[in-house]
Image (cartoon, rainbow, N blue to C red; front, side, top):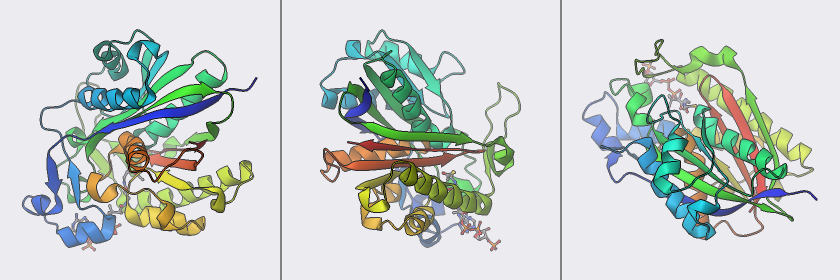
Length: 314
Ligand code: ACO
């Protein structure tokens, strides 16, 4: 009998420190008006002393609480991050110990597409019967790899975490998922460290990334809908990676989806990389917009490049 990977709990966590565009005006040659108009971002959260696992732990506790499962009920932890606490062990392993779980745990790294890659991975374990309950997290401290003197990237990236608990379900859940990578785009968006013991910073060709993001995300949404025999009318909510309001508007327009059906947190969260989709999902679930039975389309694209989508009935 077919099993579906169904989301039964969501959770999120943001570090308390808010950095507004006005704060950035003090250290960078930029303005609140420029940032709002070009990106849609007004403020973002930045860690002070917290690490990626600290944020992941809080988001996981919240997701587990909604799912009414205990850490011991979890069969697998998959954590997507670009900013792990350490080179090793995996941040997922540190989280496993801190949660009091005893299951296998590993990290997935696909930058801003990380959460979609992690969901796609978790789906395989549930569908083939090797796991019943999986905790999937996107957690990032992007502020640690931002060059705070580079106005073209410092205004975008931020910190936060989101998590979901997936459980096997005989009726519904993830209906479709697809992931892609193409390393030919490395120079468009990457971190410039060449040695494993040196922490580099983000280097980005913003215009190039913008065009590629719009094209890849639009094509992927069209492909996903076609393969599911659906149209954009069947989508209740697009829960996208929050990169730039102009990217999201262009994608919504291309696939004929009203912006009223897009969950947006970008204005308050900025680009939190792998955390942005589960942060937006949790907000939509907790404020009551996302309801049981809704069709959700998750989409993300990230550094150098990886991109993917997941279509799930909530
Ligand atoms: N404040 C003021 N001016 C700025 C700033 C800033 N923070 N940054 C750049 N500018 C200037 C540029 O120097 C340029 O000046 P010039 O015309 O005198 O040369 C001018 O503004 C226009 O620069 P562009 O790079 O053409 O501006 P654009 O409209 O493309 O916006 C941005 C830049 C916001 C980075 C945009 O390209 C973008 O969002 N790209 C996508 C990047 C992205 O989302 N990356 C996230 C990771 S991947 C992903 O998540 C999809």
